[in-house]
Amino acid sequence: MIEWKRAAQADLLTIIDYISADNPDAAEALKNEINAKVSMLPERPQLYREGRVPGTREMVVRSNYVVVYQAAENITVLRVLHCAQQWPS
Image (cartoon, rainbow, N blue to C red; front, top):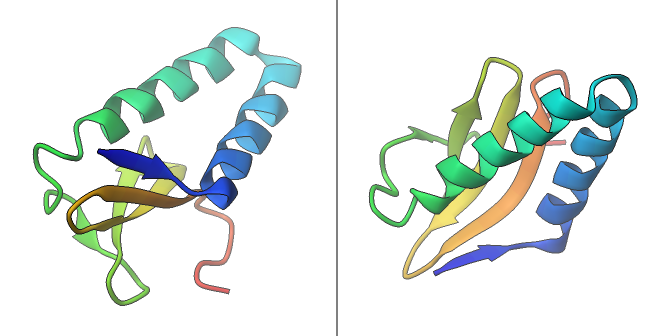
């Protein structure tokens, strides 16, 4: 089971909207890539690096985007961030 926190949903929407203004196809491709990679997390939740916040993991999507998640009984997607964003705040 995968749960997306509201902050993560808002992050993804903001990123896709921003990219979509210049290149809708690139925005759609990124959204699909993020969703595809997140959907694989239940199979191998420990595959990605330990997060900077204890108890989290970070999946790098391309070179500019990071999905921050927690892996327990379920996968919880906490944030979707551009690498230029400071994390944690």
